[in-house]
Length: 156
Image (tube, rainbow, N blue to C red):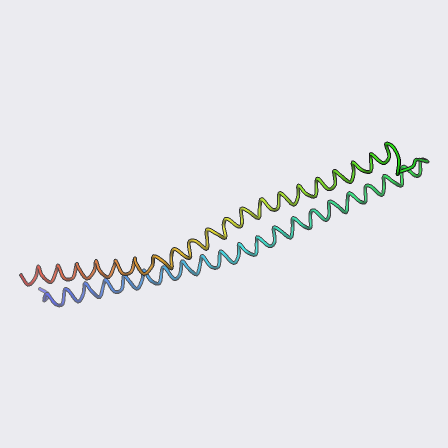
C-alpha cells in the first residue's frame, strides 16, 4: 500500500497537470477567438467595399442609361430639358439612386451581422481571459482539498 504522503503528492501532481492543461486550453481558445476576430474584421471591410463598389456601378449604369435616353430623345427631335423627356430622365436618375442606396443598405445589414460576430469573438476572448484564472484556481483548490482528505483518511 502507498504511504499517505505519497498519495497526497500524486493527487497534487495530477491536479497541477489538470490545472496546467486548463490554462493552456484557455490560452488556445483566446488565440482562436482573436484569429476569428481578425478574419471577421477583414470580412467586414470587404463587405463594405463591395457594397460601395456595387452602388458606384449602379450609379454609373444609371448615368449611362440617362445618356442613351437623352441621345434617343434628341435624335427624334425632342428636347430632353422639357416635358415628358425631362420626367423620364428624372425618373431614371431617381431610380438609379434608389437602387444604389438599396445596395448600400443591404451591404450595411451584412456588415452589421459581421460586426455582431466580431463582438462575439471579442466577448469570448475577454471571458476566457477573465474566467481562466478562476477555473484553474478552483481546480487547484479542489485538488488540494481532495489530497488533504485522502491524507487524513490514510493517517486516521
